[in-house]
Amino acid sequence: MKRVFILLIIGMLTAPVVGQETEKKEEESTDYSEAIELVEIWLKAMQKYDELPGISAIALEDQEVIWEGAYGEANPEKGLPMEPNTICSVCSISKLFTSISIMNLYEEDKLRLDDEIQDVLPEYDLPQQYELSGPITIRNLLTHSSGLPRENAWSHWTEDDVPFPTKEQILDKLNEQETLYPSSTYFQYSNLAMALLGFVIEEVSGQSYDEYVVEHILNPLDLSDTRPEMPEELWGSQLAIGHAMEDLDGNQPAVPFFKGNGVAPAAGFSSTVQDLAKFAAWQFRLYEAEEEEILHPSTLKNMHNIHWMDSDFGTTWGLGFSVYKGSDGKKWVGHGGHCPGYKTSLALIPETKMAYSAFVNSSNANAGKYVRGIHGLLSKASSISKDDDANYVDELQEYVGVFRGNGMGWHSYYGTWGDKLVSIGLPSNNPADGLSTYRRVEKDHFVRIRDNGEDGESLRFIRNDEGEVVQLKSHENYISTKVDF
Image (cartoon, rainbow, N blue to C red; front, side, top):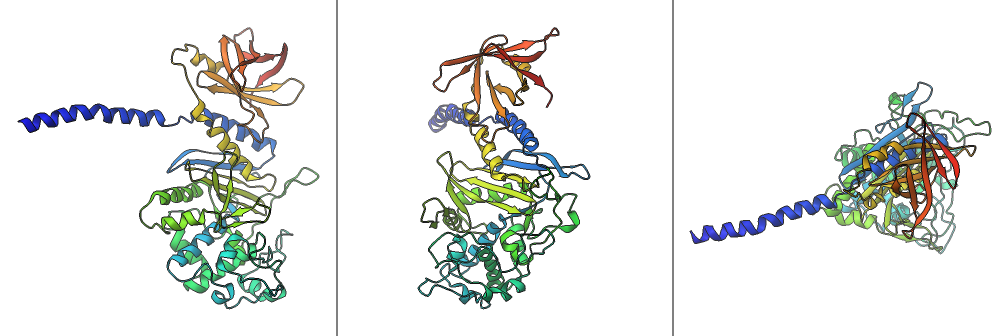
């Protein structure tokens, strides 16, 4: 009986603590909803301002997709909308799948990072023009420090109708090229180096490159819309049609369908932002794992570390991954991509387990800009506060919308931010940097909160005879009119 009484006392003491911990976890979870509204209006606007046929994007927190969206068209000729599951060429993001495959073979003791390229690829015969150069190793190829040329000897990037060379063609002309620099001297981004790593995978594994990647990465991670090539049968439907950079006449001509062929290990893959979010989730999962999932946790962490820093201290690279310091001061890892008609980006922040991807079916803009913009806005979400006693919060929705500057041509979006309003200018390459916050003084009257917390200029909303908000007044001028967007 005494033992039962003691257990009851312990239960009474511990039960509130468990409840408190649960409440604490709920309080610590971030509400992204209002930040997401800013992301959506910003991307919708930038798709128009940057004259993109279409854009798709996604944001991931650890294992959970917190937002995904798409704007514009995957196939403008048919009016087919861009979607989060729209496939695009991911271009140089392909290099990450090649790099992981190499590290998988490394873990199986089938090659070493310091193996020389000619020892694992007998067909390699590219002349070394520097007698005192160190060896060209697998590690050099992964970090773009090999001194090899950027491209193979075949011209395939300049004209839309020039096909990418096959593996055999690339190897056949290796002896017509030569190294640019001594090995381990400079960073020289090299599609040739990554293509050669694809050939190494075939040589060492005994499988074709496609078979190896599908078996060891794509199938285990259920990346069903990711392929080592672009699916021709889906071109113009689920596979977006790429478009060239805008010409002097303002046109962005469609780019013909192409295959990566022998360049596929460097630039031939296709995927969706949804699949790349799964790919990022696997990496975050592996960071905390105690057992292997494709790779050992320590191997992936090593890939995400800096293995090469160029002599200017400005370019840093991991094992296959671009590794750099973001504007938030944290380590970012990932890769960007640019092939004819497509630009793509994948970025992960290991410390916060946030990841982003953006695809554009055009060469007209850098996809990394949209990744950084989404991150900047979502990272502000933790600053959203709401005064539960503020009885006007529901009324703030009356002010939400896009306002066009009278005679100025610019636009601003006003949205809710807890018990306050925020605005961003459109267009904006860095929307979070231009975010302004306003506190309510009285109905239709707000003041901007300065960075030091003091009040700035007044902002007044003007209503029509029907009581609808139609205009903004600031600095004694009617500066903007509410418009449909």
